[in-house]
Image 1 (cartoon, rainbow, N blue to C red):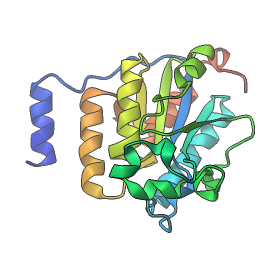
Image 2: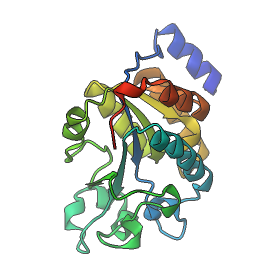
Image 3: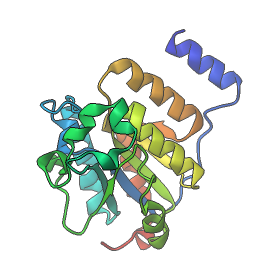
Image 4: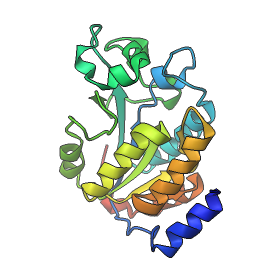
Length: 217
């Protein structure tokens, strides 16, 4: 079945309506750590274009005083804290706590005052305090970037929806190891969980937010 046929079926089912966006957004960058953006790691792949586009979006967010939150994955050397996921995906064990693999890709210029959430599972919400962080800052919309589209991005998009946070996913700012799962999951995310948009649309939204509603950082 082609992407166009899938989209036609979804449209006929009434899927894919746009979400109402709020006025107090945050940018959430999921797992653009060296272990995912450097192909030298078993879990890594070539995501330079996506990282660079995300850096462009972050420049705007920072200039507009919009909060930026990162996530990264790291495990103890024993791998015991990885649970079943390391049995399904053993190369994740390379992402050890305190090593370069866990560090946010330096091209994103993470700042000391920007939150970094350390997680063990796919969703940025699973086993973390992300909800508390978003609620405490009055965040009502999330711009979601990172990797991988078919894994941690999809899982996080689902949990954003389930926790009541409308989300935008700039397609240039998310990536995967292979084209087919990337595109298939963008179609599904757009249909069910978030609004997949261009980076320029996401930037326009961030710049449109009234200055008085932006969180001082």
